Every structure is written in C-alpha cells, then in structure tokens.
Length: 254
Length: 363
Image (cartoon, rainbow over all chains, first blue to last red; front, side, top):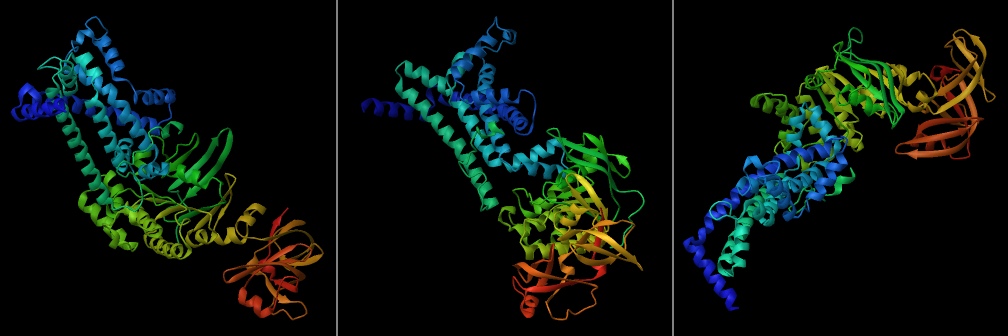
C-alpha cells in the first residue's frame, strides 16, 4: 500500500509542477496519434467504402488483410516499419527512423484497418437501395459517398474513437521506430514503460494518469457528439446506438 | 388526361437485353415514353419491371441495347441526365435527417441555391399534405407519411421525367387510395412525363395513359388501358389483367357482326373479331350476372349458361362465385346480391353475360 500511496503523491506533485516534461510528452502523444488517426480516417473511409460498394478482383484478399490488421500486434508493425525505414532499408533515405514521422506511420498502419473495418461494416449494413436512391437524387459518386457517410455517422464516430484508442495506447511500435528519445520522440506510453523499468512508479503513474485522462476526455467528447446526434434524430428505431458498433466482420460475407 | 402520344418520345428503349447468370431476364425491343403522358408498366412479381425501371432511370447500364433521352443515346451523360429525372421507390428510402432536409437533399446535390431549395421543398411538402412534418425526423414518420415525403422529394426536383417503382405497394388500402388520388391530381396538373411500375391493375388503369404488360421479361402488350384490360393479347396477359374465365371454343356461325361459338357444349355469342375458327373465350368476372335456376334472369344478355355453384369466396363486400358448367366460369357479385338471390354452394344457377363482354383470343 505504501508503494501505491507514494506513487500517487509523486504523481500529483509531478502533474502540479509539470516536472519530468509530463505535459510536453502528452502534447506530443496527442499530435502523433491525432495526426495518425486523421490520416487513417481518410484511408479507412476510402478503403472501407471500396470494400462495401465495390466488386473488384482481390476484394476478399483486401478484406482478409483488413480483418487481420484489426488485430495486428504493434510490435510486429514496429519491426516491419523499422526494417523499411532503417538507414539501409528500402526507405532509409527518407531519414524518418527515430522521428515522429516514423511513429505516425506505424500508428497509421495500426489504426487504418480498425477504421476501415468499422466503415465497411457500417456502410454494408445500410439498405442497398438507399445508394440507388441517392444516385437517383442526382448525386455524383463522391456526393453519394458523403451522403451515406452522414447516414453512418454514429458508427463512424465509434470508428474514430477505436482508431484513436488503438493509436495512442500502443507502445511497441512507437518505441521501436521512434526510439523513445527524450524531448523528441517520447510519448506517454513509451515514457510509462521507461519509468516503470527504472522503478520510478510515481512518474510512471503520473504519466499513466495523464494518458487515461486524455482518453477519457476524447471519448467523452465523441460520446457527447453521438448523444447530440441521437437527440436530434429522436429516432424510435435503432440504427447506431451508443455502443451499437456494427459487427465488424459481418461485411466479410457480403 | 389528353396528351400527345405521338412524335418524338421523351425517353425510349431500343433493343434492351439484360442477362443474369446466363439467363435472359429482360428483352425489350422497343418502348417509348411520350412527353406529358404516363406509361404504366404492369406485370407479375419477377417479370423484370424494376430492372426495366432501373435502366430507364439510368441507375443500371444496359450491356445490350440502349436508352434514348430526347432521341439521343444516354451513354456518357448519365449523371447529367439523372439530374433531369426523379425516382420514387417502393420504400420511401429517406435519409436520417429531418423531413425538410430530405426533400432538399436532391436539390442540394443538383446545386439549387438555398432559398430556392427551401421554397420548393416547403411547396411540395404542402402539396402532399405533410408540411407540418417539415422539422420532424424522418425516423418518426408512419409509412404513409414517409411515402408522401418521398413523393414530395421527387416532385420538388422538378424533373422532366418521373419514375415511380411500385410506390404504394407497401401501404394499407386507405392510405394507398388517398395518396393515389393526390398523385393522380398532381400528374394531371403538372402533365409530367411519368413511368409507373406496378402490379396493381387499378393503379395502372387510374394513372396510366398507356399500359405496358411485362411478363417474363417481355413486353406482351402495350396500349390504352381500356384496350389492354378489355382486349388482352394472349392468355397470359388475360390472366394477369383479371380475366378469370378462359375456355377454348370453336366457331360455328357468323351473322351480322356476331359470331357463335361452341364451348363445352354451350353456345356463346360474341362480337366477331376476325376470320378465325378456333378461339379462347375470355370473360371478366364482373361482367357475369347470376340468377337462381328456374327464375327469369333479368337484362338483355344474349348468353345464358346453366351450371352449379362449386365454390364461393367472400372477400370484403364482394363474393367470387365459381360455377361448374362444363368449364369453370367465374362471376363476381356483391355479397348482398348473393344473399338476396339465396345462392349458396351447390345451388343451380343461370350465368348470363353480354356478347360485348366476351373477348376472343384467336388460337
């Protein structure tokens, strides 16, 4: 109990006086994971829509990759990205290894399959004739996609939350490709790992609390938006309740 | 509705063939939709009606044959032409937004300015009697309300061609009647070029200036509703348009515009319709009157056939009476008439019908 009590006291002290660069690390974490989620959102929506609406050769291969990617071990991602970006690797000339760019790339690889899966599942769950109706209204392909994405905005918000959660909470890939360098590539998860390994439980706990608080804040924000959408719709039917994330693998059989 | 049914069609199909899984599901050599008129396409389930409509609406691309808009092929300008059309499907297919936003959605993608959008949406919502629902979520509407909103959304686009795909089939009878009446009025006022796909004869006869019967992917007959429903071209069309009595007959005499035929031992007189010797005698059930055997059957009907009632099916205010007279003859009478006449299953009756009620299909 003393260990926990001491750690908590240390954590409060650190947070109150911003020692150990807690907030700088937190801001870097939000920057890396936020940007990675944004990039993943663009990629995930595009690939998810293509999987939901398209019938192209190799579709099942992409589906298999996406499904596999949804449970991809971050250390494996980190290993592959590190090999690719290593100075003697195929993209070594970019000079990205041990930079936040490499970390963003790794997190994009982790978050994109999650967002793709959610997007494909929610778009596939729509009435297929709705797409025809939207085309019949005079929509172009892009307009159709935009209108249907608005139809699945609740599951899409869940996809963003899941994608951001996957990105900010992973540690293996970020440490492997970012190097956990103080002042440059150290993010919250890496810092927690480092401080815990040094026996600095107070610092680790402080960083962990900040990470937890950030995730709660982000999810609370999205939940509030979801609730707002639900209230506006005042719908009697269920089509994207809170937590009503479509079964992400159901579209595989479509 | 008086409308030009000649000249250049607004929308046309030439040599359209659709195959799925190696099977032909649609083969339409020619169909024309004339400006300001309504073409009703009727047919049983699975006839290919919706597939034809989707091609006309440019929502499916023809692999063989082509669709013409104002006499020119639609290829390469599908999006631009879709923006000159509107489609109302069987399901309302509303977006998860307010009613007003739904009606404005099509105008928005077509680039109509905000003010004009709002005005047109409100005008058409009012025209279909749902203006009070404008701020309601589409999810809270009843089936009838949603279909009215869907119709308002279609008309608000001010399309050159309106395509309706069984828009009332999911509605209850009173709602369907009310919306059909409203639509008939609006179509008559706007003289909009319309294609209506339906399996409901009454709807087709009510709204169509011309009726096309689609069976098994082929247009079997096309013409004015009175012609199609009164003089079906073949046995399958006859069965689909409500002819319930069909019996093979042989011509025995022709005199003064009338022809006498013998069918299952009964002589039937009909208007002479050509130099054939074998024909299928067709009778609609509503054209047959009944009287108990032994009583004098009122009226001037030339044909009177004795038989025994084999079955009575009571539906709502009407009753469908099947009579065995060597062949099966069906009559539709009101339930009250049935009670007044004291006719029940097993009773001997006289079925009478006019020579003009008989339609002959040469064999």
